[in-house]
Amino acid sequence: LGSVTYAPMNSVKNASTTTSISFPYLREIYGYMLLGYSSLDSFSSMFPNLSVIHGRDLHQGYSLIITNNFLLHELGLKSLMSIRRGNVIIARNAQLCYGKSLRWNDLLETKQNHIILRQNRDNCAFCPTCPSACWSPTQCQKTCSANCQGNCVSEKVCCHEQCVGGCYYHNRNMSSTLICNACRNMRIYATGICVQKCPTNMLKNASRWFRALVSF
Image: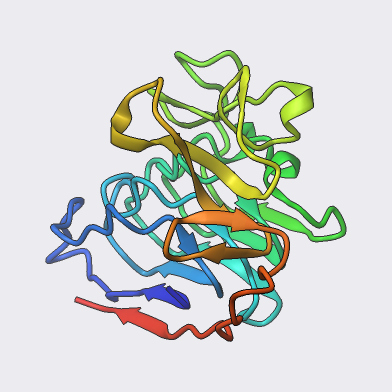
């Protein structure tokens, strides 16, 4: 998917903290994601498996913008492991907790990018059930061992070096094949395998993406 904008412009009068909109199969966004002006209290059910924001297309230099969500209590992006390009701004979410607890530098592939957190709720920065960083009171930020370089399915199980944003077990069987959430370079779509360069017997399909505007 290219870029995602969710900005329903909810008013306090008709505010709902939940939504039926969900993208359970969305694991990577090629462009940016803007989440704003909603009454949701969490984005957990909307993006349960989003792992990578590539940032190939940016919004004013940002790849992740979360702003003016007046009932947002938690980010809930528990699967997010990599922001490959672009800055991040999370601002003016008056009820938002735990944003400052997150290890944002672990998510950024380019360390020169900036993280801006301001005008959120600051008196609830600590996670009640996690050792340090959390997306919500019950969703800890995933930790990878040093040799996994931030690319793992669990703390001690690393993903293939061509994966980015972690991986998952095929058929949810811990003895089955590990599938990359996204590829560092390119994917052979017939097999789903990530590779560094296109095999000599195949042709590269130019990357194409589109922008999704979700507004209800």
